[in-house]
Image 1 (spheres, rainbow, N blue to C red):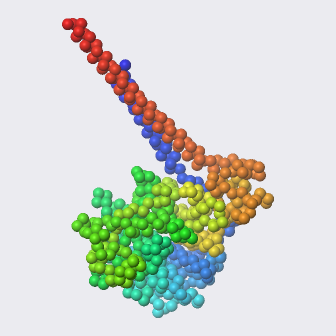
Image 2 (tube, helix red, strand yellow; image 1 turned 90 degrees about the vertical axis):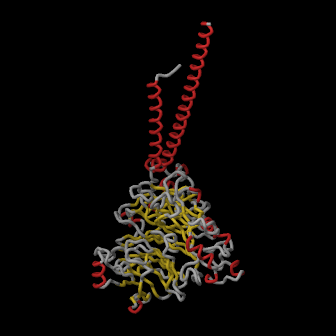
Image 3 (cartoon, helix red, strand yellow; image 1 turned 30 degrees about the vertical axis):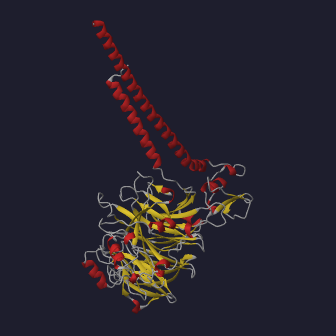
Length: 619
């Protein structure tokens, strides 16, 4: 039996089209974003859950936020103004300092081809240092820093100083800084055009120190966060503190790919004072490694790092960094959240170096490992200062600060991936020590002004609620107060104070349990959703699955809530079924091809046998 060529072509074409159709269906199912169970969008609903807003006519372009839980104050940096707010009630203004650029500075800014909107003093840095508030602003593309007396909340006139290398020139430029022991560690650019990146330490009693002007060190970076790393439990760095810098930059290790953006984490040590002859006034401890966030080895990588939040656990090994990513391509509004353990980051910093020149020695052949902090082992060998590190090791670091180890996320996949939502910032609330099941609460601001509350349990992410705080305006900074149980979200128009507990917003038992809000549980006696108290036995809660079957005896199921709850599960079931059908059709196609091959072999064998018989008969 032999199929007609046209029928064979149509058969295979139909199977291929069907497979393509199923693949498109699977891709479309994967693109569905996780929907929040609770939506709080109207002003009335926001007021009902206790949201407070601070907005003034002069609070334009709010770009920095600093929370002091001890003094119960919230400092807000805006365009040419700094506010002091009551952290318990942000509508109460405690103080205000105006700090504007002079008319001459604005004129010079305009002469340098900058728009009038950018020719102002945008406050980008806020740090408390003793009795003073250290502030830095762009000052019409001529950065300046000054000090504000916290008690009187007035600007100290003679405290104004040069802000270059400490604050960016451009108000739209990414920037990160941290204050440690009277010293500020800044990650910014040091020129008008923003083409010379730098990681700079200043303001302390020691000499200033910075990165090299070398594209192997920093290549068009976009800095997002600077944190003080908790001291490791492996005993290697107990005598010194380390600072981590999170940023994205253009990769130089991939020669075949141009302009590929990759996320990085870099480290410097606080005891570093530079080298004696090599790397003078430069970091001798600067090393960096690549972060990876993708949904599978063949999936699209998330190369733009947007924000990082750190969750410090009682156990150092459980300290986790939650990183927020975008794709490099603006056409794709993808966002992802990946979690990285401190243990994996520490392991990367002691890994092998990427050698840009194959003639360079390996790090094992050098007297001291390049980029190392002053560990107790080094001190025992007589190295008590970074200026005592051999020149040979420092020359290697000059050209090779990159490490080969790629830091992969927990579970080798994103915790959360959204295809139609662009997140802009992230904050984290650790699990309650009394909770029977550990969890992590994430708060995510969007570019449309919404605040999402999400919970991660056993690596599975679930979005609890969505609040529309600033319609049409992106949220740029989040700050969490564990003492007050409040989240502060700032936009260009002001700041919102949001309680993290709002159990009364859940209407019934099904709604309360389906939300999987760790803060809330259903009280069987009062028949209302209330703050969860793990010592009570008359409260219902199911964080693992949000099962509402427990509510059937006390509360009839709500069809709308049931539909929302099972939508994701049914979507996953449908995707699984389609995948099974896809595999079945693929196996069927292969089986048909095998049958065709056997039929052809049988036909050929029959023709050969017939030919032999004819030949014998002719003889």
